Length: 217
Length: 217
DNA sequence: TCAACGGGTATACAATCGTCTACCGGAACA
DNA sequence: TGTTCCGGTAGACGATTGTATACCCGTTGA
Image (tube, rainbow over all chains, first blue to last red; front, side, top):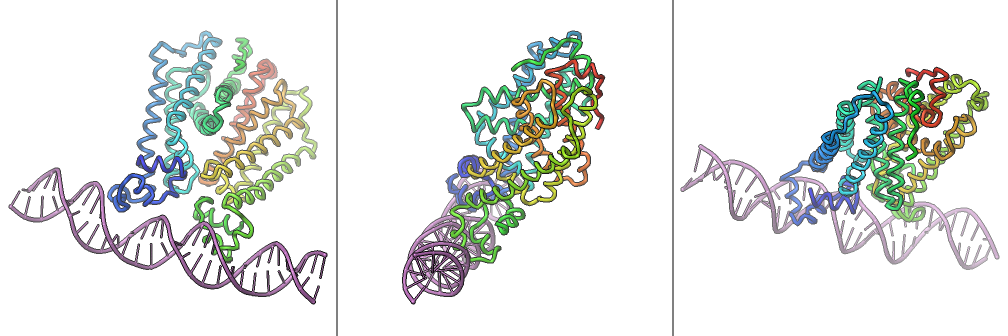
């Protein structure tokens, strides 16, 4: 699995890897592959299970951290303060994801390739991973951030959209190191824009009443 | 090029196609490939040029159509009506894109695969295509839809985000035929949410003043 | 003690691959 | 009229591929 990841990160495209190629790079006999995996799909799913759950756990744990520091947004008695903290939360989450992809560059690159790649099995697995992350995010947000009149389903839809958009932002982030700060800002802005829209859609009075200014990130 | 597209749509992954394979499927001698293309990248770029400009032109032309029918949103004397028409515009645009990907299923599938694919050349070309579409969209929208206090750059950023998100919506649309109506609605909702957010960020009074209700799509 | 098994190896096979060299016929053009 | 391209073909090359068969040996467990 290590050999496959390394090769896929350079040669690119897990599915197009040769069985002999990975075996060679792992210092093993080609046939040994069959002792562990049936397919290349099999290998891919195994790798995704490992790295995917690491990512998911990492994100959860990191999202939980600020909550322990008394980061509680539930009371919306002061909307201005609440949304300011929402901004901080968005910033932290974005930083989190982008740090992760920087730390797991190859794994991320290879994984995303499979998202629209050849193998239907891998596509499905990747989609489920992203969806799982969106579900996690929704649950965590519901515990911490009580947005007015934004239902569970709405929040989930927003989370899904955010996760998918972060795929692109992460790509940019990796491919354009010189623009990293700018990209990070764009991502934060995008997320806030969505929440602003969600609030404005349900409680338009809130924003103008409280004279909330959209932060100029 | 036709043979390559057909093969890539079934066997998947343009880069992993064999030169001989394509030639065979085209009923040509393997070496004939070299008469026209240097690389597989070369082939890919040529195909993208052809199909990409078709898509881009199709989208532009279709976006221009309603403008000719007197679809003019420039005057914002009546914001309610203006935003209602914005909704119609979003719906039309979404339908347009989704119809296109249905009509060019293979080309779309293959193209998106290259977006995060092996070849750096193809990745770059695809990113430029998407970006070009976002630029087109921005220009067209600026002519037709005069959103208050939303600058050119802001609109471009929003357009870019929309285009990228439509990549995913289109994937869903193709892969889950039974949910097509629902997916279309989600896409429209997403776009409106963004615009709502953009307006709320700059002119929060507008939404509450005019008692605009976010449409329940 | 002995059999089974899990993980690893060696060898061999037919396919397929990309590419090189060489040849060919028609069109363009001087 | 002759020459030069342009698109296409033929055949051969060595390399590499996935996989099948068969052998190997340490661990486990009855």
